[in-house]
Length: 418
Image (cartoon, rainbow, N blue to C red; front, side):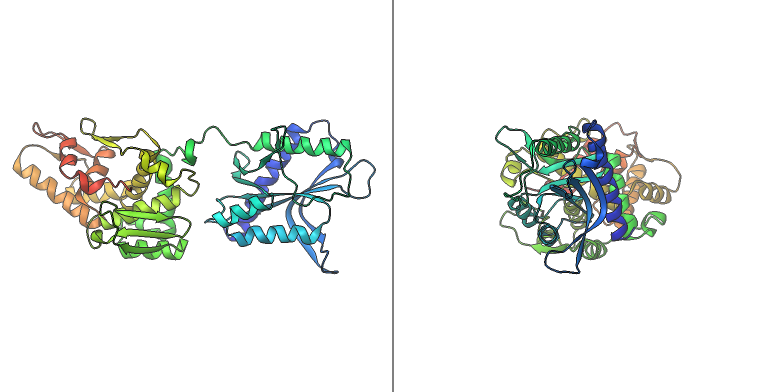
């Protein structure tokens, strides 16, 4: 799907949202008073023969009037990354060039605005909505009036034009209806952390792999550090740098706004290098909408490994954020289907990987783990953790539980970015 098609898709979804607003919340109001248009062209004030096209507009017409009294301008942007400030500035400039009427602006996007774009939208009294379908949207930026009721602020306010009680009441109804219809879903977790299941994250990782190369999943290929770094650069404009942190316990950082990933230089050319890069890439993909500041994030305690269940205990926002990034990295670098196929190949049978207390069994187990580690370019702990997670390890040992094995290599696997 090209950029235009994506934009049209979001526009179509937004139109359904708006029609849903008018249909459900404005029953009894004559449609001729609130007219919805798509791709309507408005004459330019500055250019005699010029026209400016808007994705969606809602015109408010007083009964019997020969012109509308208010226009809601709605812009739909479909980006695979954060919306730049230039897109918001152009929307504002287009509105200013096309009308001297009272106007309200609604900017709808499928991805978050950059900080500069958000600051500009706020200063220009724009309403900002994130949403990809009529069932998935939330209001990011709006204002309240003195009565504490929800309103969409005036973008261009013609003080000489008196709306009248009927039109003023209608605009208040439309504002309230839009808020009621587009109010943020309670299904979202706090701090802007989406409640993603393992299956959700695996689908997101699979989507990235197919964009990278369909052969990765079809032929069970592994990914190298160089290949992943090049992909992130070409697809998302992400720069990857090896860095000497003052705190050597920091393995990596991801600056989403600057599109910059920094990796502890001590990890370069080690088995942990690729997994940490994948982890930071996970933050970029999964946490664009995060609304928790770094100080608060650092105040949360780290997750603890429970050796009895061989899992980490997730108790706060930081735990969930880091778990999501870890699981994304594991799903990206060690896809389930590829791991199963390669495990069967190195095991010699289409069966789970088994071990017991027999030295030959332990030697064979280590052989398979080493081969898988080499193929996927990750640590042995990452392989064991992933195999155990998909129930491919059968432990017949009387001396060791899988948690003991993971504990022996624990520091190699779980990446906890501070």
